[in-house]
Length: 114
Image 1 (cartoon, one colour):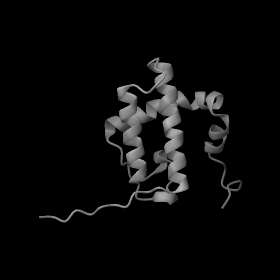
Image 2 (cartoon, rainbow, N blue to C red; image 1 turned 60 degrees about the vertical axis):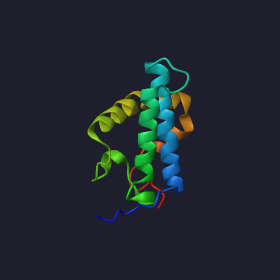
Image 3 (cartoon, rainbow, N blue to C red; image 1 turned 180 degrees about the horizontal axis):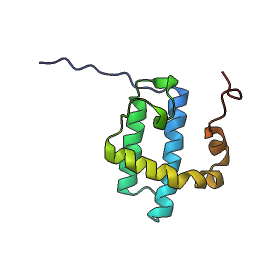
Image 4 (tube, helix red, strand yellow; image 1 turned 30 degrees about the vertical axis):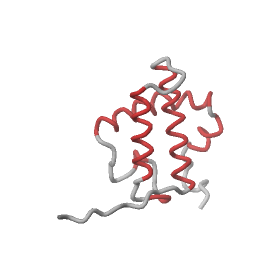
């Protein structure tokens, strides 16, 4: 019988902020595409999946953007769906959550805080 290794869940400030932003993007997507005020079942499932994957990210607080990550931890269907959600919701974030969207824009290397 193989011993199962239990990973410690990431709950640092960067991971919490990522979860919050992804949740907001999924809510915008569901509101606009599915005409729902609360998350539909499909979007709720995607939100839970994304939150779980962020909690289990092996890079933790040192993680980069998922698109730039060398390890794709999302299953193919979920990866396609979250890409679709982010492409759609990105522009809407400027309207609904302008501060978060400006903070989320990657800065050139010289301007980044270290």
